[in-house]
Length: 267
Image 1 (cartoon, rainbow, N blue to C red):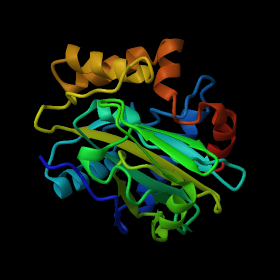
Image 2: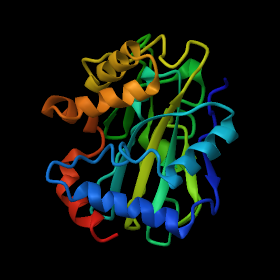
Image 3: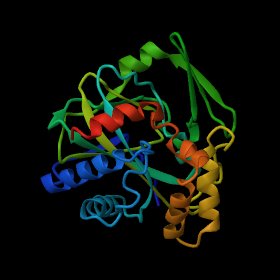
Image 4: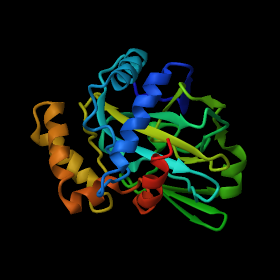
């Protein structure tokens, strides 16, 4: 199965008002919990119609069976400091695709942007970015290749996204470096799916778990399970422990949890 190689795809008007309201109510319920984390908002709601609709739509588009790995809610405005990043933990898997869903307001312009010429081909993937003034250093943790370029050039050449309406979705290649534009306040929900490549689900070049503890959790669960329902059950058990909750919410701005709990209730 070929990897989803586009930077993003804008799919218009696929979610109904009821679909969006369903997602909003789940977010509000999730963040009303005392020990809520930004991720796994939908873990116990994978049988609801809107989730099934999204999953089936994408499976038909990429001609592959998708497996839910995680999700996260995010609220951003002009007080939010967004940085360039990519979903390094997804290199644990052969293939991955993200779905970005706008919950509020009714529309936003250019909500995400992507680096133009980095991680555009599998043979020159990089997993880490360190920015020092105008210098960007990229490193591949598999073969230790590295490259440098100017931050000013990256910003000038970045790929923009179009105006997104509530009801649209963006499918995203999570292995591309991206960042959230924060000029417009917005609530969004992102769902991460993985799917099989030539080696099955798991990559033969996984990321080191000492840097990304969630990588070890994902790898162990997949190796110990006979089907994906067992993986999901294992995730539910892992989320009961403080150590795993910390690992599985890393990268989703857990320091913003108080803000998220307040803002989700305004949906």
